[in-house]
Length: 474
Image (cartoon, rainbow, N blue to C red; front, side, top):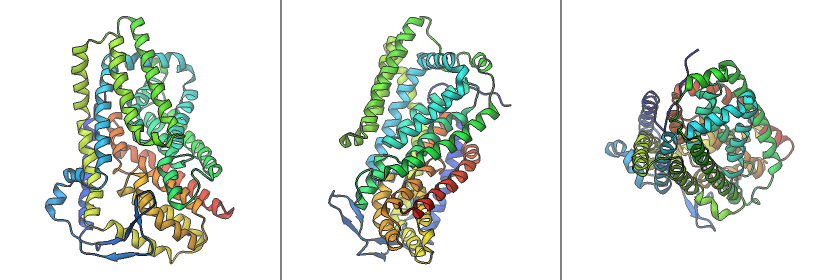
């Protein structure tokens, strides 16, 4: 069995970074090659009552002139900052830089190590119960408040905890990012997929919740089965890992009283931040500020807690800057991954791909339409990571398409949520996945090989649930 190690700070693994960069570059080349094969076209757009641009299904689709010069493709990782959705992209980058600085302060001050030691000491004998609780927590964060990118700073903490409890980095990734992705897809009350999509489809917000709650339970059971089975295969005794780990993540302060107070401060700040995120489910005006709230939460925790733990001001500032620079490789990954969508949009072939998919639906039997809609969203999610952006693009098309074949808009929303969520933790174009893999020191190829089995099993389960929904007239 390979020897496990614990990492400090948000340092991107060099091996994982190179693997991710190579994968993304290959996809960039493929995207550019597609601009020479796929004809340019676009759907007419209209502005809805909320002032948002959506596809005008009555005006339809038409072919247009469009091309992307080579120089634009070469500069696309930079030009993407000026394109559609650049505001959100810039916000994500700033968010990660702040998290990088704050987390490094928490790490180097010894607070993270003290947290892991405390949890290991208290729950080491009940680690599988803890595993169940952690997975449920992250799934609930995705299903109830639509958290995904916001949990990235928690991934290295859970990975370090998984290692300390005798498992490995893949287990930690599954307990955190995979779990939140599954919850996000189950979409019980996800405001960014189900909420937006139902509004566009003219359905009451979060209506039909019972079916999505049932999906949540079944997906949770499947995920728990896969993760527990894998964890039992790689597990080592907790005591052995604790002895090997030593001072793996920061060095514990000599004054345990100071460290206890620092840890309590950190936990209080975290709880306040999580409560804010949870409250966004019920207070719609807060939904646009969840990422800001999480960044602010870690910034305050990363400054106040280390000071209470005895970290000096000058040392704190230098540590924060080092944390920011350690996350810079992730920025390059984000820009390169985002440039794929930029290339296809600038060449005006995204709409052509969507139009071709809609045309294929006319040749399919009625029962398979809901599965085909699932497939359409899965394909589009490779290029467009944002759930709400995809909703504005796809819902005006796929809901009328579904209703023509007697499929309800409510079931169509479930298919949309499934197609948007699960692949976020598999596609190499998803920035949050690539960053989390780098922080966890897991290569994309290793993660894809492991999670592929779960994705296939989950695809079968969710497809059966969609057919069940169709059969009962949901």
